[in-house]
Length: 102
Image (cartoon, rainbow, N blue to C red; front, side, top):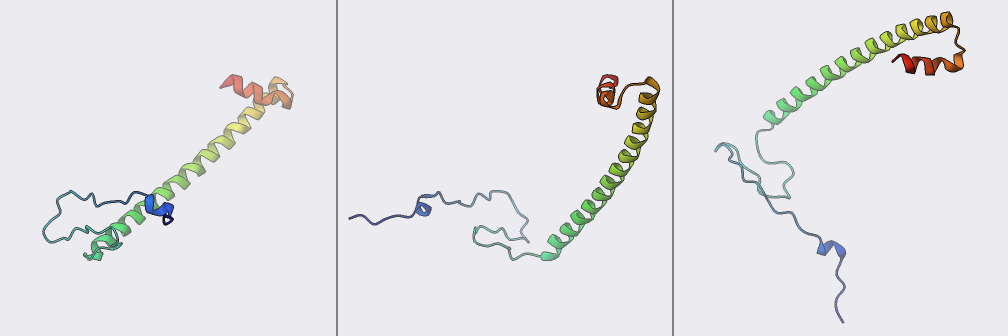
């Protein structure tokens, strides 16, 4: 009788593929089991802080863009409503009329 094998045992295992050159004062982690390498964490912390600040600014710019776009769309919609009232089109046809104009 053969021993049952788990499907997990048949999965391929990841091997280390680190081939880049690293400065002599830094140690390359060659182990897949090592989650956090024994290196200077202040460098990693500074990089993370820099990226978080950049993300904060990007979100601010995105909020400004959405606000301005909303105001522009609101003002255009008022202009379109005025045009539709003057042209005498029923409100059912307003979306078709706007589609044709664009």
